[in-house]
Length: 256
Image 1 (cartoon, one colour):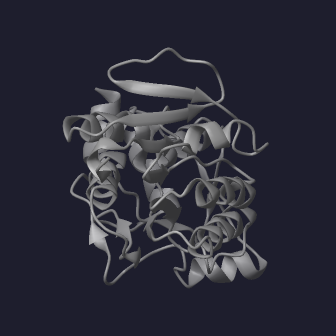
Image 2 (cartoon, rainbow, N blue to C red):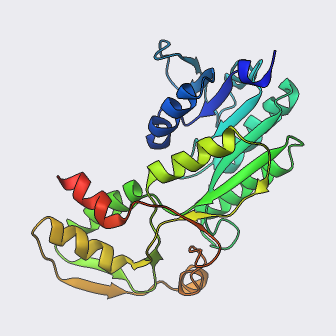
């Protein structure tokens, strides 16, 4: 069978990115298989396989007969172990190409989430399978969740040194589809949003859009994480692919 006739396994296919990626890959004529923690019936030409990537359950069945793996599944912790489990099974099954979505600053920001992402990058790179890794800034969706929670507090804690360069998940999805249908390229240029914002400004923009105001309390970010954020290690100011959709556009759409 040719590459185009073999299924693409998508992890994280039921999440935000998956909602944008799956329709595009289907439109490109590709067979799709999604690994999910709960049983699902086939839908819109997508086959679902039940499994648990962190526990290492169901992965062998998911990767069987697959040419390409698009690995988008992620959580607050354990992403490095998930990637090791997936890559072990993928290599054994003869998978030919892996695309992984990571986070900007994975190798620089000394926090558990970033360190797990970097461990996952290493698992992909060391698997022996040709790969492409794309690092992305925080999605507008995630930033919205954070600022809406913080904006709901009576006094808003505003970490003085933290800045974000949020990117729209649809722009990231477009790039991932392009990479998945392409050829292995290793670590490719990052993708980030068009503007860098202090966290306090993101919270203020959310409150203004909601017609609310709150007092702010600046708070320090101490130690090595504070130094990393002061240095902008979670940003890519030069050489990144810049997404089209701005935070302001996303916010207006979200609150419409």
